[in-house]
Image (cartoon, rainbow, N blue to C red; front, side, top):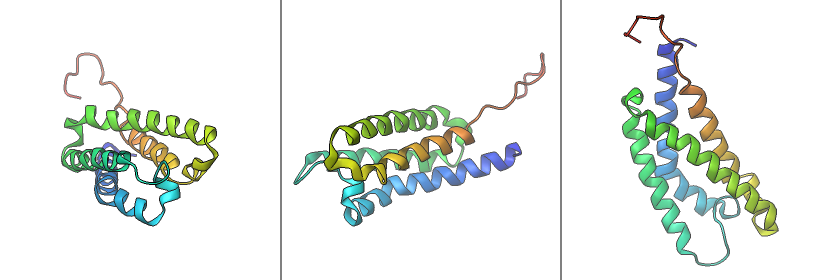
Length: 133
């Protein structure tokens, strides 16, 4: 994949993920709670996590304009998604009532991490003495 195509695909991914985090997550929680809502009954956790992801979604939308200037945010999204997904997977194993997350938010976070990591791969190093990378 050429650098221009990779950058275009990264922009599309950032917009898609940003919109899902911003507006899609509340919809998924309402439509499929067993795959997207943790715990039973009322929980303040849900409002908090939706707020955190909505905020991240806004910043990913901003990063989509010039991803090369927002590498730290994009890599934070990759690594935090991996860690969050791994913790959720372990908790799903430990709590049979939460097994629905194996088909919902857990694989979704791994997919976000994989997509952004592949599209953020580093360019090959320029020849020695070439400062214009």
